[in-house]
Image 1 (tube, rainbow, N blue to C red):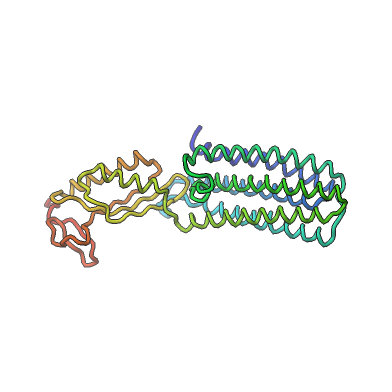
Image 2 (cartoon, rainbow, N blue to C red):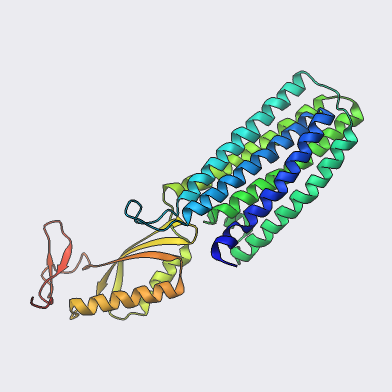
Length: 329
């Protein structure tokens, strides 16, 4: 399976499931006149739109770098994921809460409750299966990292968003089942309104969590700590690099990392030697961490070193430049 197919498979699966569920829920909502069922139908239709946006984001993120975007389009996925969180908040959560409050203030008897319960049970089975598939995929990627910690730290934003949607759907269906059952048993439509409100609160909570996680990536979040560890390991394998003076990593997209590192070298190296050692360091780093797409290495002197060191001089802005060891033109 190619990388693009692997990146979109779980999204397409969830989209197909949600299209079928949304249509069935909408029909059941009309038949039962249940606010909780309507909230669930709106939730599923919102999820369908969200997954289409994620597919757009994945495709845009795969565009190659060009003159206007020299670091590529990897962060496009974060933008579209943020829109997904907004749609989940407004299209699903806020409207479901509004519908729930309306049903509580003006309760209506639920009609044909068995139809609604059957649809909710089938939907719960489908959504539960999709969520279980997401959990298995997360378990593959998280390794020994605790589940919740992985959700907060992961850069695989498309997987996290789809899992968040599916988990919210499962919890919402549970609330809708209890609400519809209580409305049927008691004959009081207020329970239906309470169920719709609870579904809305679940969606709002998940949307806020996703928005905060994606916002951090949009602003420029550092890469996983394993990348920084790999940089230090690679430096240790190049004896001519004496120390790391500064190190920055930035997550540019799914599987795309930028590394900027300032290092000092042992004395006596020519400019050509320095270039060869930098190339060797980059080879080692990319072999260990293929996601490092951009690597910028700057040779410099430690702050406690004398500016008059052989082969180096200081520019007016304080940066060091190789001079004496450059070959004559």
